[in-house]
Image (tube, rainbow, N blue to C red; front, side, top):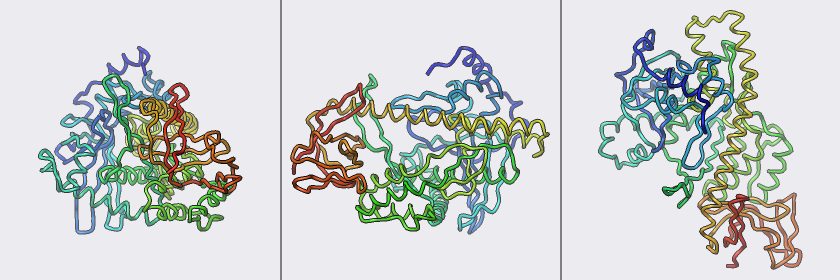
Length: 485
């Protein structure tokens, strides 16, 4: 989590704001522009403004930190950012892609501070159709650094005193976000509402509490606005045949879907049209389990495992899970390098009247292809690190709960035992060796454990009661035994 001295020095040199930076930018500092993030967020890279311009039309403006103004191509900061590829978020801390003087400083869209942005204006009608869009350089000043929790209170009708003058703007945000989400879900876009784990740490950085991170209506507002912005930007620059990095998600393998279907049949559902799969068929499966939170979470994870990983590509191949023909990552240049790269491309197009010379075009084309691969690799590494840290902190937490009993759901069955997921998001293993009432055979086709003598069955989605018998911090592994009712 340390940066080379040359990178830190360079960051300090460029992390100052001057009035010359405002030249040739649209000045939006009087607009009602807000950020909405978690309570402890410091790298604020997106801000929004919503206006109702007619009975059936909204103007959504999304302002993204213009990081490319400070991180110059081939600079020490840029080379280090390429190596990292993305910021890494672990319990209690962030390992940033950019030095904190940039990520938490001059690039962050801090409340009341003049900041440079790359802005996208969209006119969206009541059918969720984007009828007009434009991209431009701007200078903004966030009116309020809102938090998800406080915005959620406004939407629930219990407005905090310091949010009273923002109520109408927040309600308008929700109104437009609901329109966008309804259209997206009808088109078959899959919503994997799998809660991440929220850790509460003590002053020594040790976990003292954990549970699912609750996603509310306030989170959905930002999600929908960022999705439509990324979609619009990708479509715009695909039509220009620009050198670009897209976010793609290819169709799943047929064999994996067939295996998944066998498991789903045992749970009372199935995938329709499996030979010519459409994301709506998978979204429908999730709907079948909407009334049972525990089974819904398990099925969501099973579906995710059957799909291919999303990745970066210099070719726009569409996003299966979202059911988008065009998609990219544009909205988080402080923490993702692909976003920073396409910001740089967009800036070049804006500065040159949307015409690049052949040499520049060819150079950027080659970079897009190379960076798509390296950024996808960096993302995989970051994901593994984040998962390992979660497992580590879960093991630390559960080591203080040996002998405690919990209700859980069987989340996976293997040849060596079954994994059980608790309400607090912790997952532990019940080994075959600890199933002592019978000799259990692993039925791979139906993903079941079946007792040879009693014919007793354990299957995915089944509710069980377990006791914690071991929690190894070194192995990041938690072991349970079943408790008879």
